[in-house]
Image (cartoon, rainbow, N blue to C red):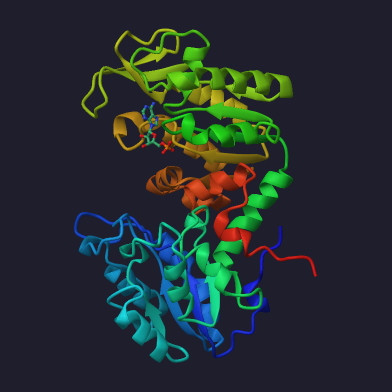
Length: 399
Ligand code: AMP
């Protein structure tokens, strides 16, 4: 799959609309706690500025649900962008109101305008055609550099692409990089290829698991989702997280893995706790001995050791989802240990999903990973073999 390339556009001196993903985490005082997503957009923005373009930046932040909610204003993002670009970044007071349209029409070459939070407009998440049209009317070119929302058919992501022909739209460098990298891995991984899949639920990753099976050599399960598989195998999982309606599906996945010769690993021990809390009483127990009423909140040391062995010969590792409730120190050990195994390996290592990216960053091994995807849901949908709605009309047609 080849995407329309920004380098093939005749951008010189023109007005460019860049859809970015500035949906960054903030603390309770409105300070940006991780600006990776803002920094990731810089190369596309600088490329356009080097072409003497007038640049309009647009993004959502949080879920204001069609209302103007001041805590979701892009003011801190515009300020950070100003520091990073070392040039003025003007923020419009609205998205497609008088102020935004006026500022966009007066924008000159080399200037940068940021629109207020796209989700202040209810039409954004509804892929409203009128909103797409108004956004498109601001610029000559459209660039999508927002991989993290490309799995959403939203007005600034999908609808807007229909207002530009193939000579006036393209993928930005970040989107291109994500699609290239993840696409290559899924098409032609260096083997053995292991997928480590964790997180809370099977349901969120069911399709991804099914789709990954024919492509991988090993699957290592962790996190809350492990218990649905363990229950299906007939074990008593106490009060651990479980999705009873997916027991059959879990059985089918394990059957399919066996049929395909894929090694499918489940935790052999867990850190069990009497409640879901940092001050819970906890104990390391085998998966067959979870006390009644207790819940497994992390993988145990034997599982860490086993998974370390299993990962020792792999050449490609894809990791999506923590091994336990890593937000609580008490249940973060399993995830931390696995993060170190992955970081220290000589394999190509890909981390997908906001939680997993957050986790490797917290313990400082993010630089050791080959690739950290900026999109959680988007990277999974891509790995499921889906064509993302925001990417569909940026695919280059055969000449
Ligand atoms: P997901 O959004 O599905 O990737 O899940 C991430 C969340 O799963 C994190 O917030 C973890 O705290 C949570 N999680 C991981 N392991 C468990 C577990 N054993 N029980 C409950 N929640 C878990």
